[in-house]
Amino acid sequence: MKQSLRNEIEAEYIGMLLMASAGYDPRAMITMRKKIVKKAEERPCSEHLSTHPYVHSFQRFMTQTHIMGEALTIYNETPSQKERNSEDLIWLESLVLPK
Image 1 (tube, rainbow, N blue to C red):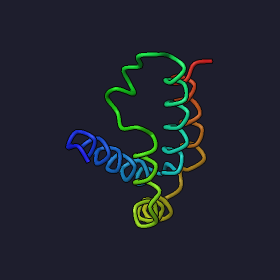
Image 2 (tube, rainbow, N blue to C red):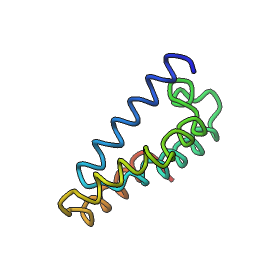
Image 3 (tube, rainbow, N blue to C red):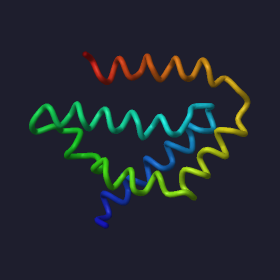
Image 4 (cartoon, rainbow, N blue to C red):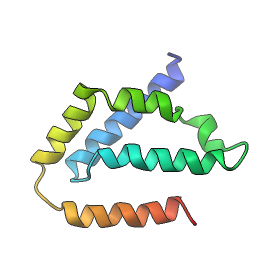
């Protein structure tokens, strides 16, 4: 794996753990990433795709049982503000993925 791709995936991993510790469901990160990549693929020469790991490399790493399991454990042990955080993710998605 190229060093820059490795760095990107490591940053995403750390972000997923931070997201989980803040009460956000880490599985939402994968769903959101799929939507962003799909939207970006509709526009040729997307800067996002040229500077971020391809969704398949990201998904393969992040959905490994021990990786996602660690994030889900943190998420499940976090005091609940989950309902509010779910609403925040919907709002964020509307900003990132305009219709």
